[in-house]
Length: 539
Image (cartoon, rainbow, N blue to C red):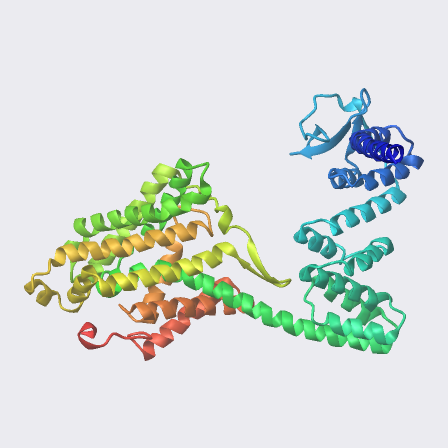
């Protein structure tokens, strides 16, 4: 009994020891195998390269994708002295030889680097291997992008891999992409006519450009009448959807332009609508806000993402202070003389433009867009919403709401309304009208500065930036109803959308002319705009 037990324990101990040694050996040999295989890749002939690549695939090493992509692109080399892997890249037209693993530039002579050759058979194998690696990646986005990259062209081996992996896929987005690829294959190559037509009917729901191109080919080239008819019908359905989404895209760009017009004109609505001052320097307040953003980015070169947050209050402050100086220095002496006010502010706008040219030069300056405002949101394959325009749209609404709160819920707003309705009565009641005028003009100028921050994210900053929007701003204020903020809101978005609707038909310049003619005709019928003021304010 004891001998049997000792034998049993000894046997189990030997098994555990053997297993441990096998694990250690296999771990050690695995790391060696990768290095050895890479080394072997630099020594084998072209006919034996595929067998080495097959061994590399079995290791499932994380460098395999980079290795295969580099090799497929014809950029994989090795150092003839030690057979280490190299990557040849062109940077600004200059060739650089980098280490394959560290990506550090190697100081070796070009003649010492030898290319690892590939032929058509190897390219086919590499494409299939790259597709399998990407299709089995842990990241859902990588798998989906891998499937979508196959829409334009897919070989039989890769397609078989997609079909095989479809049953194992758990992510719905990746599943949909795989189903679409399978339907595209059936629509082109399925020998069963009914299944082919069924696949085409399912494809009619897709807006992928590759699907549309494929259906055009089927509709024009297939010799099966029913299949061609199904493809034509599917194309008509897709074209109708694309037309709908193109209109949505136009409306979005119209709202985006409207938000810019709102920001540019809302300050003018205060100075022109409430104070009755025709401020031709309003565009230069926008310009100062844009240049403030540029200067903030110069001072914060390593914090571009945060610079826009800093620039908003600074731009408001700079433009507001300049506006107060203009009001105290010039406009207060010209109350009740609108023509002289117009000429004086026009002169001030020229002075400000020249001042900016002297400081920053006449050349346009580029303001960087923060990373969180870059890129776009993909609604579907034909509709994208750019993030910077989306942020500016919501920003314009927030500014509008804040201005409403200031004018309706604060003592400044109460005084502004009192002075705008009856200046003499307000002065008789003890309101300091001169102070209210200065603050009102500063508020309108400050909001124009904020508009400059928003504009700097859409276009280059230059001395003439504000001039591009001053006419449109006046049109918005007049069309909406002088002194009515809600009228300014409606007018800005109406003119923005109208401009974008006319542009595809008649061009940008003629579109602006048509809008101007429309406003002139409209003002003939309704001289006080869309939302005329009522009560004492109208007097």
